[in-house]
Amino acid sequence: MRVFGNLVKPYMVWMSLFIVIPMLLIVLYAFTTHGNSVMAFQFTFDNFGKFFDPVFIKVMLKSIQVALITTGVCIVIGYPIAYVIANVDERWQTLLMLLVTIPMWINMLVRTYAWISILSDSGLINTFLKSINIGPLKMMYTDFAVVLGMVYNFLPFMILSIYTSLAKMDKAVINASYDLGANTRQTFMKITLPLSMPGVISGVTLVFLPAVSTFIIPKFLGGGQYMLIGNLIENQFITVGEWNFGSAISLIMAMIIMLSMYMTRKMDKDIVQEAQGGNKW
Amino acid sequence: MVGSKNRKLTRFFLIAGVLLFFYAPIASLMIFSFNDSRSLTSWAGFSTQWYTALFANREMMSAIYVTLVVALLSTFISTVVGTLTAIGISKSRKIIRELIINVNSFPILNPEIVTAIGLMLLFSSLSIEKGMITMLVAHIIFSTPYVILTVLPKLRGLDPDIAEAAMDLGATPAQALWKVIIPLIMPGVISGALLAFTMSFDDFVISYFVSGNGVKNISILVYTMSKRINPTINALSTILVVIITFVLLIVNLLPILKKKELRGAE
Image 1 (cartoon, rainbow over the protein chains, first blue to last red):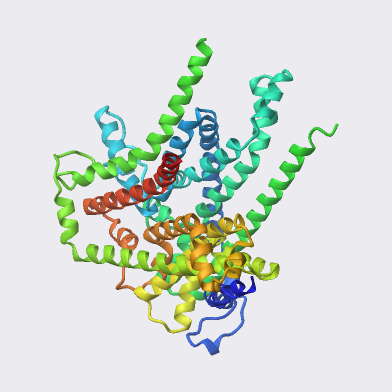
Image 2: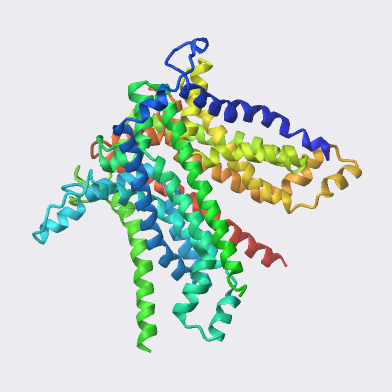
């Protein structure tokens, strides 16, 4: 069917122009000095050197910290939810998973904006607290608000991912475990949990990656002064106009993300091997 | 069996709790879009004044127009390009297939902001003025890989000889494509198109970087306006939520209805 093979040719040109060249441009900008004409580029490491300023390192560490906390919270909440859904009647499973996934499709700005009127000093929570003579609690523009916004936006991905791995698990293995005398707790710890690990790990990537790069959630719920790495990049491109430095930060962020993906993939492999090799003795 | 009853209750509260967490903010956003005062916390009676304000606001109407035009055009183009490319990929040699699939996965794996600044740098180095056209092109670029990924599995399940058979029977390659292959992979094409549409409709990050000061889609408008509390945003958001939920319900109900129809025909 070589005739149809030709259908890929236009897309290969398209792909080179719109996917490959933009990435090369980021690398080019990251390694050159500021200059508006394309021909006047000069090679430099300065943009990366600039990043190793305590101020920027702090921003990067803060982003990673916030993303890690978000991921942790998503696992702690998401696992039990996925577990319960995977164990209810099948008709309910479809409906519940639909309900969990609908928010994923709603505009992220809208979802995040919705929290402003809940968390703000005169918001719904504080209005309620005031009526019972507590507070006001300062929630907006805190780490709490940012993490909450991230958990709210990304939790469905974690639930979906863990649910998928739990739902396709062979129930016979679990029954076998009970037949062999294991109790609920043992079966969960030794069978269900290890077998669902791939789902947890893909959930981790689905939550961590957007959490580390988002700039909308910190801007809406953390306020103008709240800086994560995404905000730093946005500032360089939109406000400051330092495209070269902005490109260098993006490259560093892409590197962090690739590294974390590589590590989670490796972990995934190890765990699966362990689960499969666990009965060798 | 007190233990089992307790467990059932725990389960119920877990599920109810998470659904409340997911839907309460959206519900409050929608409810207060009908509030008769500017407040987003105290209810002053039912009114549709914010919807009137929304439809009278020229900037908002233009944002809705930009969003819809870009979403419809980019969905159409990326679905056609993505489907044809997927068919091409399924009939290509392994090297080409893997090359395309790997390069294709970059915009999917990369954080959106990286894709966005890459495109921004591209447009500016080609001295293309940022506006609605660049937004449209960018949307086509980020949607197409998803369409390809959605259509490819359908092609894998297809009998490889089927197009050949059509051509042995006298069909031209174009006819074989249009009358045999595409109808068979139609479910994949439709879900690819719906994915492309929702992604374009909701996109903020990429649109924000590649469109100029003048052109705004709904997300960009929400971003610029949300610094102050403004019930018109609630009204706009309510409309968005209703549209997306409607699309999702269609997507999820269609297969069920089709199954019933098939069963009825048997």
